[in-house]
Image (cartoon, rainbow, N blue to C red):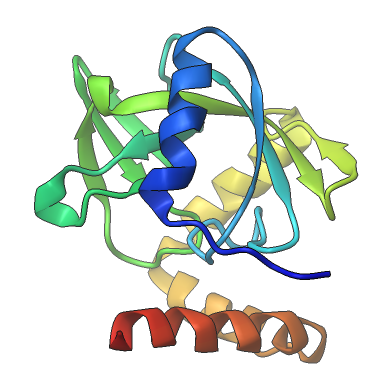
Length: 169
């Protein structure tokens, strides 16, 4: 199967428009920032228009032009008024602060391998998330081990090579 690569903005502008019109949208995932819960190039995410934003929500948001002007999906850590603190599950250190107005979609389902629906807010999934968050001080090492497991190296290595190539261009 031939793969087509579309620029982040070109892909997400119509996605954003459909969400703002009240539709749900299913999108493929690219990248590693939500490992180990969402795997890029394997999983699909079903998004709905965002209503209330709460901790543990997985949201799609737009980073302003001062930080590259791209669309990203991460997990909400805290909400204080209009300010939202966000971090990817696969990001060991960096947290981002965005305005509520920058968030326009909320994940309501993860389709593992594009087929098996997983509720990211089920008690079981949230227990795993809270354990993972408690392990934040050692997350970097756990992610290194996870990425280097023999069955993960096959799919991760090509993705890392592609990501590094994009930064070199």
